[in-house]
Amino acid sequence: MKASAPFSTSQPLSCRTHGGRPSSMSMSAGARTATSVGTSSKRPWFGDLLGRLSSTMDGASRALKDAPQRFLDALVDATFRFTDQALNSAESNFAPVDETGEAIEIHQSQIQGAIPDGFPEGVYIRNGSNPLFGALHSTSSVLGQSREIWVEGEGMLHAVYFTKSSAGHLWSVSYASRYVQSETLELETARHKPCFLPAVEGDSAAIVAAYVFNYLRFGKVSKDISNTNVFEHSGRVFAVAENSLPYEICVGSLDTRDAWDVGGEWDRPFTAHPKVAPGSGELVIFGTDAKKPFLVVGVVSADGTKLKHRADLKLDRCTLCHDIGVTPKHNVIMDIPLTMDVGRIVKGGQLIQFEKESYARIGVMPRYGDADSAVWFDVEPFCMFHLVNCFEEGDEPRTSPYPLR
Image (cartoon, rainbow, N blue to C red; front, side, top):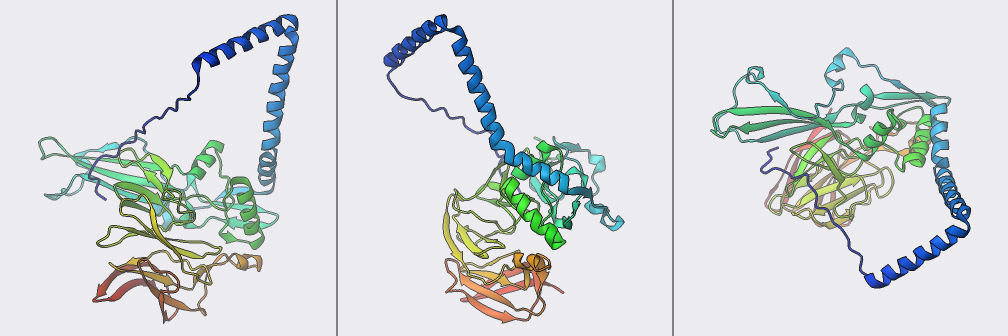
């Protein structure tokens, strides 16, 4: 990904000035001061008593407000035991690494080969799972065990910067890595320990408990892992995973800014692979969820300021659709039998499962279409994560999925 211009991390400060009538406010304040002094001189203990009482009541109010949270935290700590998952020798390439913080200069002697002539200045950024606290985690309790799966490590950005000297013939190359500072990463970092109970794989009772406790304690079932992709739209860069909203990042420092909900108009998970529509520059997005509506497609304006279209495709199951295809006029949807079903957990099954006896189909819809305008083509059951290519021949869209066999 080329950075055509530096991104500024500075934000303008705003200050609201309240209107009023200064002379009246000044007189009133003076009157109140005189009254206070008079009362204090007669009964100095009374004001002190009121101050202490107010402070005590504020503290009690805060304690009562925090009591449910503290109780739930204590209950989880007493019931569940976190353990680190071992890393197989074949998985050593996936072992977590530390953040570099500031960019590290890469000496020319450390570079193998040569940078090609005409290579542009810019930055290459990748995103990947990098478990916080050194490992993926499992939990055990009287309810059984649950464990994080390999995609659930927190997102870490890795950036390689290419800069030419002023003379234009010498390259400076540097590397930096930083965690995506999601809301849930900051929460666990502040507590210095893993807090979210694994809720994808394991014993049914333990997973149900993880759902309940995570939601009661943190208002969400799982962490914002933000570890799957980095994409650019309208001069802004985002880190994303499909279980939450994307987080905007600063290319120069890898600082994390706010989560992006398209001006408050997108209130559900966000695909890790949005696509820029050819010609219009609009961003085609979608979000899958374990509860209805299972799959919603959206179109974001080319300038990234508003959601121009939103459509519930009214699927009857939560298909783990990981990618979407776009052509100049159409969207291509994969409805595959790799599904997520909370009801299966209650019956003793797993949350995610490939239903090999179920159906699969490919849907084609107009860019601004809805469930009624989508045309579905039944195909043999298969599993796929990514589309290689989508294009149109005349008015007919074509697609090339990349199936997993």
